[in-house]
Image 1 (spheres, rainbow, N blue to C red):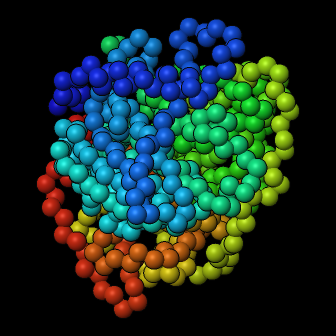
Image 2: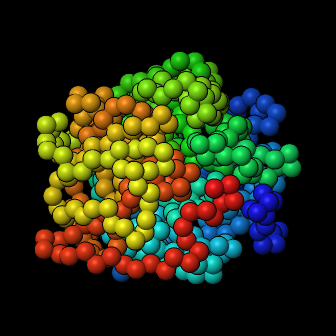
Image 3: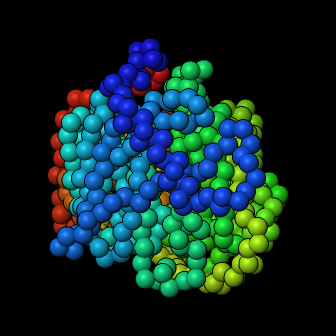
Amino acid sequence: MPVSEHFRTPQLSRRSLLTALALAPIAAVGCSSGSSAPAPTGSRPLPIPPLAAATVQDGVRRFTLRAGAGETEMLPGKRTPTWGYNGTVLGPTLRARRGESVAVTVNNTLPEMTTLHWHGMHVPPRMDGGPYQPIEPGGTWSPTWTINQQAATLWYHPHPHGSTEKHVYRGLSGFFLLDDDAADGLDLPNDYGVDDIPLVIQDRRFTPDGALDESDPTNAGLLGDTIVTNGIAHAHLNVRTSRLRLRILNGSSGRVYNLGFTDGREFQLIATDGGLLAAPITRNRIQVSPGERVEIVVRFDSNAPTTLHSFPIENRGTLPAAEATTFGFDDAFDILEIRPAEGMKSAAALPSSLIPITRLATPGTPVDHSFELQWFMINRARMDMNRIDFTVQVDTTEVWTVRNVDNWPHNFHIHDVQFQIIAIDGTPPPPELAGWKDTVFTPPGPTFTLAMRFTDHSDPSYPYMFHCHLLLHEDRGMMGQFLVLAPGQQPAPAQMPMSGMGPGAMSHH
Ligand code: C2O
Ligand code: CU
Ligand code: CU
């Protein structure tokens, strides 16, 4: 299939273009200070994804998401065909509280099957939105579940087997923020769009006419040369508060970022994938691999601007130099220029402790399952929807080891749970990896020991996935599946119709 056919989308309506452009005024409401210096050519205010409208009825919070095609001004003055939820790119931010039930109606107006997965969410397997919950074109899927996990920055994205990279690359993803009383009780910036900013970082390549370039993927997948933040290139953020919380999502296909500021300033890391850390950690760099989230708080004591930047990757394990280059580990990018307003009061200190974390296991705990990552495979097997790789018993602590025995970088994501890294090569993890995680970067070499608990949602028919979150790797089969069973329950795997599913949906595979 020629590349141009990838973007043969239905006739674009004038309305869909306007929806895309409407992102900018939304940002202005949330973030503009109105008093900063004129933007350098091409720089635009960071769009803030709108909070999704919800109705609450009989204790159920209801959202509607519609996946569809449109055009977005990702580059100034260019119309880029993109896919989005309730708009032309990305999606609204869903927000719910621990204890609430949520119901989401997902409509697919795309020309092909998609799914919608709640990354990081503790959710029954039938509601997980992985490859077992296809939404055909014109179809609707209506998952419902109860939020039972701590406050966290989660996200949602498509998960159609074999086509996840394409769907995410074209623009499908959004934030899902969870709140709880414990997090509300802490003095942290939490005014959405003002001092609490969701920031999805993605890399894209564009053709000369401004279309997304899906040609020539490397073993890292579609590695871009242009950074887009919240859907646009060359964004800046006007800040009016002396403390700024950034909820950062690496929404890229295959690129790892090593984030810091161009002026070397320190920031505080307060949360990882599954929620707040036990205490803030002061750093001047933090690494995020695809699918991972970090929350940082940055202080502004003057109006000196700074730029969030990605530095060459330091944590490489035994990655050979040539592969490091292929995977973009030597690259550096400006991510987001930050322009503080004048005359801000100096910032209040953050709380010295956040949310206690009870350790699930110690480094010596016996291992239940071990995984070796190599060349699009886990334990020398590719994903097969007709093969359940293993089962786990509900509400028991599982200890897994993961080792990248490849000469490529990978990471490891588990559905349904937040896990703890209890050891790296037998040694307790550094503080930035000691909190709740659902995705861990695994450079070649070290063995990661993870502990987790599948507290409920046993289901003999529908599995959960574990996989590398470099999306090309996942699409090519670097994924497996497991069932969570009640004591005595026997597996009865769901039979899936395979038409239209499976690797190979992108022509370059
Ligand atoms: Cu974010 Cu199985 O994925
Ligand atoms: Cu996931
Ligand atoms: Cu991988």
